[in-house]
Length: 138
Image 1: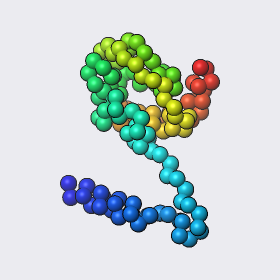
Image 2: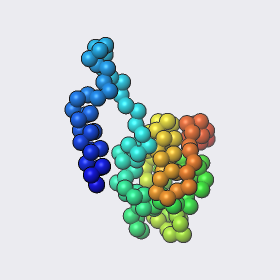
Image 3: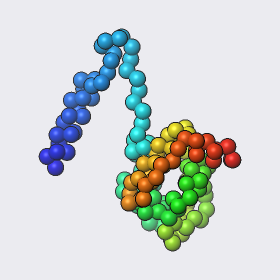
Image 4: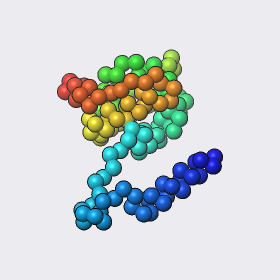
């Protein structure tokens, strides 16, 4: 717990002191930080699929150890197009709506790579090219 306090304190110091900013040396604003998969997940997915990826029983399906992720193309399609109606995940039926997400191909690849390597999933990456291929079929 002490290490977590040190990390939080360091992040706050960094935040308030414009850590990593080159604004003072060139006069140009610092480049925006590229969002990580975890950042995108927290902003886009966490409300339904929860912080632990386990979803909400009988409402939103889990991403944790999810058999739905077996086919990357299906996962990519789900993020791009969303869905409504019944789906089966890990042997359980879910009947809710997921709206299409307004993310770039790079953001989709990044967040899905995060999901595939988190929540007890087996790993793997999703590339921007794979997302573009699925988007091209829509």
